[in-house]
Image (cartoon, rainbow, N blue to C red; front, side, top):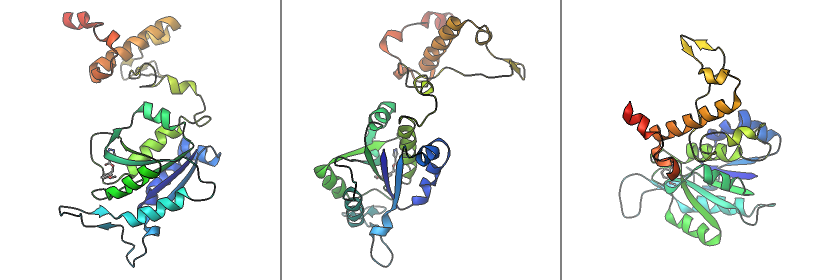
Amino acid sequence: MRIDVVSIFPGYFDALDLSLLGRARQRGLIDVRVHDLRDAAHDRHRTVDDTPAGGGAGMVMKPEPWGEMLDGILGSDGADPDPLLIFPSPAGEVFTQRTARSLARERHLVFGCGRYEGIDQRVFDEYSERGRVRLLSIGDYVLNGGEVAAIAMIEAIGRLLPGVVGNPESLVEESHEEEGLLEYPSYTRPAEWRGREVPPVLLSGDHAAVGAWRSEQRIERTRRVRPELLPRELRGEARGRHAAE
Ligand code: JCQ
């Protein structure tokens, strides 16, 4: 997969050289290219922002540097015929594990990281008319710019690419992947630590019992912290026990 990133803080994306994703890049599984938006700003101060039309607080990113930079990326040789342009934004659709799975099937993603109060609307309008554009939010809070959100999305997508994660089975057992439930609690050695024991069932060697315990833990944990994720058929279960407690 090819990923281009446009940002006025390209240094944020040094984080992608580390660990799992860094290894995947070295092995040629992911081709990430980071571009400094200021390279497409040609005045003496390499200005990328201006005051909002109609007045108001803050600054808005000017359309011209975005246009030049995105045209360059989308028209570069070997460019994909149908890239997907993504703008991280608190005003976008929510990015979930389902989104990550769907984006992991793309050949070419281009992330545009906005700063200040956002990007001139005409940039979205222009590229929506010419191709596919999505505004994506990583959650209901406000960041100073799209960089941290883009890194989160790139990591979530990158680890789903074939060959990036060593043991693909570890991908299906985790939170949100199996039936949309949260993960069960995990333990390792020692069997007792500061008076706290590993649940005996996990040391019993009874694989069926371990499986049943984990399944129950996932359902209970999901009910407790994210009840909205519980599938309808699990909604009533085990409430009697709570009422009796
Ligand atoms: C992403 N949740 C929060 C901030 C404007 C494109 O315009 C803007 C982008 C940002 C950065 O993204 C976020 C965000 N998901 O703050 C303001």
